[in-house]
Amino acid sequence: MKRKFFDLFRGFSTRRSARFGANSILMVAIFASILGILNFISYNHYHRLDLSYNRDFTLSPQTISVLKNLTKDIKITGFFQEGSQTKGQFKGLLETYMYHTKRIKFDFIDPDKEPAVAKRYKVNEYDTILLESGEKEARAKTTGEQELTNAIIRVTRNEKRSVYFVEGHGEHGVDDIEKSGISQARDILIKQGLDVKKLILLQEGKIPADTSILVIAGPQKPFLPAEKDLLLDYINGGGQILLMIDPVTTSGIEEILKKLGVKLGNDVIIDPISRILGGGLNIPVVSSYPEHHITNNFNIVTFFPVARSIGFDPGDSKDIYFEPVIQTSPSSWAETDLDKRDAEFDPKKDTRGPVTIGATVTLHEKEGIDAPKEKRFRLVVFGDSDFSSNAWFSSSGNGDLFLNSVNWLAREEDIISITPKEVKGSRLLLTRAEGRRLFIIPVLLLPSLVLISGLIIWRKRRRL
Image (cartoon, rainbow, N blue to C red; front, side, top):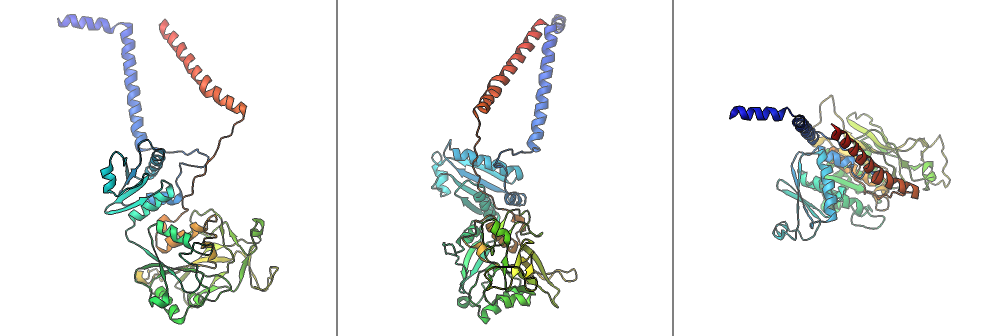
């Protein structure tokens, strides 16, 4: 019986059809194995290439920096209706995020099908995004990159940071929504999880202990001696202050900075390039920046309506470190004759550009040893405050510069970069001839070539 079966198997295996069949099965098995190996490799090691016109599938440098520096796992839950177009768009965005980090997991819930879950999380609207990390949670109401990145920063930040805006000297109002206000700057800080408060030094009598960053935005009236003492004590105690001091004003901040070797010029910056762009001569335009954490990868233009120069003379103090952040173009100059109507460079009185109008001031390392942490103050000084006002905040890179300055003061250099921009739509316009070719090649020609190739191969194999 066994021999009969063996003879039958040998006879079958010697047939041409059996050999071809076995060969085909082997080839299919090898091909499937290769596909499996390639799929495994591509799943663990793959690269995305964005060829879209607006780079729709490329995240901003800030988002990538945040994702690569994540130290906590994040669970993202999206509450969408089944079949929602927004759900598909958000899923694509999340997959782009997960390309840069393995710390994000996501899930989708339809509030109509799972109302108990939506109620438990207190979700009352469609397209709500919930982020959880440990015991902390944050929410996003839109599905854009900027909102999602800000929510990730909020949910992973270890501590709540408080930013106080000093008022009482004619500063830009933090709640003022008019052009002269600074409410847009306040809103973006809140979106990043910072606690924004107002501070009137005369009423408070001190700088609150929970102050992470102090902002003085364009004072028009002098600080009283007691207020200046509070600010100087705060600096000497390792405080962080963002100072934006306009020209042609005397606020008393000049005296504090002078003790640190910083001099605010009694001048106004003139920039002929601004006239070419349709602006006034007294609106410096900055497009290149000194190397600094605040302006790292910063390649967009910033505008400074009516700015003054900032100089530095350390004197006998060698432990103060001054770094320019914003410098005007070589064609600009610091005009000292403030009453002159027709600005003209005077080499005897004026200073030719580049002129520093933004800088950082820190306590430098002394003899290779760091100063105590509680003494390491940080200051960012701008010779203009209007660049951060509502009228100019959205102008090119002005808002990014303000936010980067705050992040640097908060010692969060890892999230300093360009904030995500809104994606702009684009259209593909074709002529009639181009449209005809686009139809003929992929719809008619390529499928026909595949069909003809298949028929030729079939006929050749049939003759074997």
